[in-house]
Length: 284
Image (cartoon, rainbow, N blue to C red):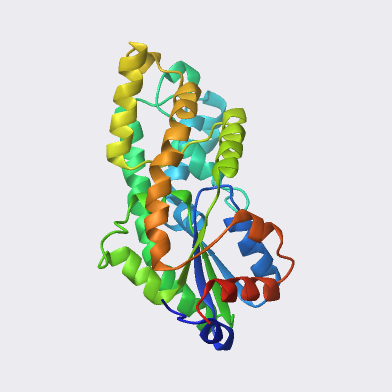
């Protein structure tokens, strides 16, 4: 690990961490606490995806929808208006809206072929954004003068790595640059995430093999074709399975770093609290 002991962590002139875990357990909240201290640079993987790697395709998708409306089409064709996504650390809706959900077009669903294409584009974008971590860690110090750095990852990071492989190129590059910190939720957290998702189902990125399996299972169990799938019902049905699919992958990734919990994060009030928390997870 980048910091092998608590003393090494406390004495480090630069502290660099990467947080991972299920979406909704506190990664961005923690990043906000550290960013608010004034000494930490917050690198958001989802923000990087939506601005650098998928920004143009997201805007083009919105333009394609606008072109279906004659009034807006005329304004776009005459350059009287423009369309751009307004992505922020706290509002990543343009990325989610573009990623979409599969199923009945009348209910906002995408054909599975198009959905799979977008899933693959997101996978490539997320991997590219993760590979940019070292660049942004250097940039944070060299350009802006930030002493410390936190990489705030998306929930799907575990889908693109092989944590059992000690030479996994992406995990090795990330662990060489940052201390990997798993935010581990318990079963109560998982059930709350499921309840929250059930109230407002959102698009997700899936490992291709997992998506193929659950899609075929859903069609077979319900004896329906893809055009009959209610997109929201499908992603609700899939969500709990996705969480349980990811949990052992996060668990394996945890051996590359240290582990904290959402309850630890909720108790933090300052950067100093976080420094103490991480020191407590490291050998003396």
